[in-house]
Length: 416
Ligand SMILES: Cc1cc2nc3c(=O)[nH]c(=O)nc-3n(C[C@H](O)[C@H](O)[C@H](O)COP(=O)(O)OP(=O)(O)OC[C@H]3O[C@@H](n4cnc5c(N)ncnc54)[C@H](O)[C@@H]3O)c2cc1C
Ligand code: SF4
Ligand code: SF4
Image (cartoon, rainbow, N blue to C red; front, top):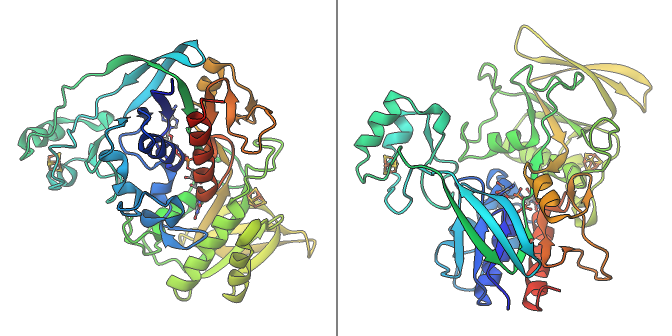
């Protein structure tokens, strides 16, 4: 018998698998370690290949009658989905087809059914925040490390009594027929990698951090200002292959970072008049239909410098001096920039390694490796264990969604 099915991770891959299994009548338990669903896609602003705002990304194609926006998705009204946020897997035992899974749920402190998003708590204490205007469940999240006297005072003033700061963790044990790993990726933060200076100056950021700056619903309202002093940005430099294709970090090409860097370069060229963008690269790898982003960037006047960054030196006026070895000119060049943006590797999420070890799976540079079972979909990781999305390795959203659908098809055929 199929179900219940445990899905670990509620990014686009896990959410797609959950909704489509649930629609087919299979009970699913969708476990998410954060307090809201959506995963990394929640932070991306516009999405290739369609350049839609990510909130309504068509690639996910929800059921007819449901808005395309996956943050207002079927997740919250589908009785076959048991969504557990702030939850992780503690251990897994049993046998394939009948796994016993122990889950631990940390308190969310705010009841999403009662919270009316009045904004009282978020304006009074940093412990409360809205992770995104479109987040699901539609409620504020709480950072327990920031709870102080003011947070406790505001909790008692919540007009709907939605906040309970005395809530405690809980554990639950379930028996499930199949397990789907959809734990996704984490953006590599090159702290301590000397040539990039990440963490040493606020104007050195990653592409996900840039996506948040470009987003009109983000903290800067979509205006590009230097984090160090709020001065307008005039010159942006992006550097490719940060941590990827590297003997010191990750041996693989992260596949999508050339495309998302070009996407951001084009957004800046189109929406932020007069800002100069240069991209420092080893190779530009725009796979499949994404070559158009490279052509668009060229036409928009984005500069391309083939070489490697040698060092970044902060200046007194808030700018950064970037020294680059240009491998075409065979010489060192120096540029002055306001924002230095790192196209970092996609590394496996925290927690993926534990699942690989608990289930005795194979790994591929830390991501879950599919078993060679002669199929073309590559989503089977073990007996009644499946994997989809970026838990398999760097991938774009449409690919993650397609893999999730392949998993659903396999499970509906009896988990083979
Ligand atoms: C800068 C940047 C720009 C991008 N732009 C685009 C774009 O324009 N178009 C596009 O198609 N793609 C883009 N991508 C890729 C896109 O982000 C991914 O394809 C997509 O988010 C993958 O979804 P996912 O569900 O596989 O993983 P994730 O989004 O990483 O979701 C995984 C979820 O699992 C949860 N989780 C992790 N570990 C555990 C655990 N142990 N227990 C419970 N829960 C867990 C996480 O909290 C998360 O919610 C971009 C990526 C980056 C870095
Ligand atoms: S004060 Fe209460 S209702 Fe208002 S946003 Fe905070 S939790 Fe929600
Ligand atoms: S996709 Fe581009 S930036 Fe990313 S690792 Fe590959 S070559 Fe480097």
